[in-house]
Image (cartoon, rainbow, N blue to C red):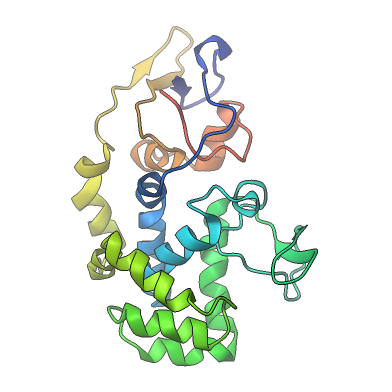
Length: 234
């Protein structure tokens, strides 16, 4: 895939799967920096945010995540934005819909800080993910009796607790650019002066946005991608 970074794209260079299944590792790679950013802004462990995103969205593959950009299963609760209705604890329940999945990460932080029933969680340290997980269950975030254990298992299996050690978002990005391939692309310019790159395996809009300095929304717009597309194909 040839991904243009400024204006138009030649559709003859585009190829993507109709139904991409996102793996857990791909999901973590794509969203861990957003979770770290939210941790540094709001004091919520990145491991908890990441584990909830994985669990609630099925690694970003659920209908709610794909169509509603809602990665945390947050229901309407007075929401004035767009909505969608799905069967959950009851039939035809109302869920929040976002324009971009990153907005759901921000709203997840706002949600936990807004409601008093979650207030006690912020007395726990950033690295005490077990208390946060159990506290979320006790506060009623989810009805599944095994919710806390599921979060803890995810955090420990994927070593998500390492994310909680990232005290500064900008430093964490610089330290891991090589790991996720931010600096592996060669930038080209065609005869019309349009910059472009060739997409590699494992690339996401988030990675390319960080490398190029162009927002995810603009990358999608310039390349005529539907807002539901989170992942790219080489």
